[in-house]
Length: 318
Image (tube, rainbow, N blue to C red; front, side):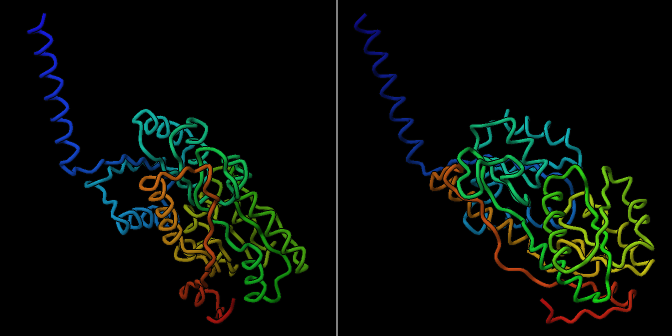
């Protein structure tokens, strides 16, 4: 028995020494970061790229001390749920959800893994956090709330004779409903009439946009994921019929919209990365991290659309 006890003691001692050697080897922990993105379009792609670049600038490089598992749901809510479940089953150290439906899918399935969201207009009304100032759970992140009132003001400045505005958005996106209410309130202030033009699937975009021809003097589309992904279709119909489109973000302008006054999604992604570093490196809890916003907005104009519509947008307009 004494020999057995001695052997066990020696084995345990060797194990301790080996473990100590591994710890002292300086090999860093490799954090697993899962990312679910609702759909591919320039705004969300920019947020993803900004997040990855922001992590790298802070010393968290994919393939070195972090492992990123990026998944795209291709615009399907059911895919968001499937991807969210996979990332949770993989026991990722942190999950980033890009866009409201993706964020809701993840938040509904885990209350333990830290979750950051981005490109979500109002996390509170989307029921992702208790309040935007005090999230109180495992979810926090950055909002892409754009200056809807300023964008409607921009529309009025560019199209001063406009009487009626078509507000184009997806009826099932909470972020779009929230923004449409802000836009309508500003239309009321400016004495503009408006027509709700909602879609429930991407297949309806062309038909709904076409239905506005002859009824509106301009179209406003907020940062709506379905409309952003189908913006080329919107622009073709609108531009061919001489209807200016004021949109929610720069990617929609690049896809044929006339102009926007909005945020930079790449910078929004980088801001989200700073929050991720605080969680991974400094042990911060999402519950104690208020939702963050970008304060800087930029004017973006599509010169080709200007030329087609015969409209010149002053570059100093705000």
